[in-house]
Image 1: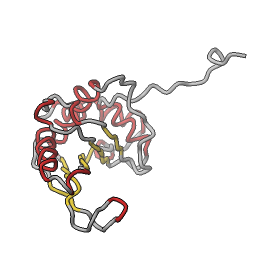
Image 2 (image 1 turned 120 degrees about the horizontal axis):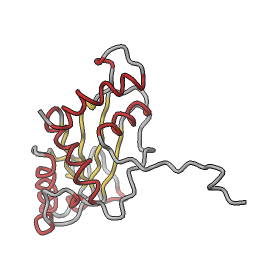
Image 3 (image 1 turned 180 degrees about the vertical axis):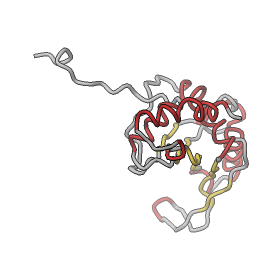
Image 4 (image 1 turned 120 degrees about the vertical axis):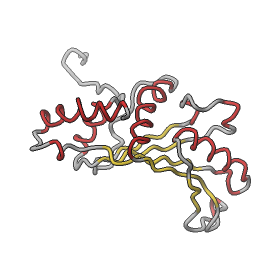
Length: 190
């Protein structure tokens, strides 16, 4: 069993029941899936950049990514319908928990000048999306093998109905959110 899954079952579920007053443990929100998406702007002209992105995403996620195609033509981007534009992976189960453990404890703390993840990135339905400017924060990748530095979008889909429940769930699992600065009378100078 993944370390984060064990943490969820043993520690997070009782804490969530205590905080939100759920009737039973099955009502507690859980992480359903994690979607990783990497857009490759050079893919329309250079197929090797798409292969490098697929290789990087496979190393990060532990499973083979699928290639995404453009749904419609956009003249401003010189994009035609059906062109390759990126790759994506959807993680569930044990791989999902292993990835989240590496993301929270290894990758995010390696970001330069990291102050915490903003808690304003929820979508109103309990799902959280964070973007990374470079995929090299994951220890599986080496600079020489990665090729071009690419951005990476990570969406964590939860079964929570409200953003506050999802934020608390991710905080208990170890997501390093920013400390919200509160205005108090000692902070205000007259």
